[in-house]
Length: 107
Image (tube, rainbow, N blue to C red):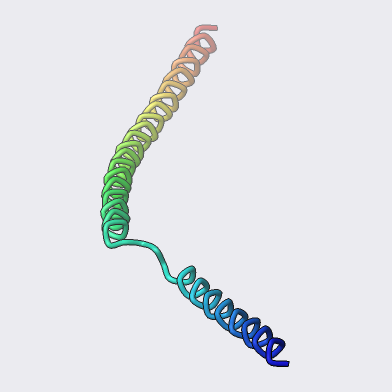
């Protein structure tokens, strides 16, 4: 009976040690393994990306403003051409009326 007690005690001790090792392993795996260097690298990368993104957005906004100015100038020019067209139409009609009146009066 003495040998059975020793074997059972040994099995229980191994089981407890195994549980403790598993618990320790789980705690270690739950801890983040990031070092301060990695955190600093991530911060600098994020800052650099934000800077580049801000610069790109500023360039995009500048180009968009220039495009809006060009479109406004084109619309103004189209309006001027439309006014010229109306003036020409009026002038042509006026000349046609004068020609017809002169022809009618000449008869």
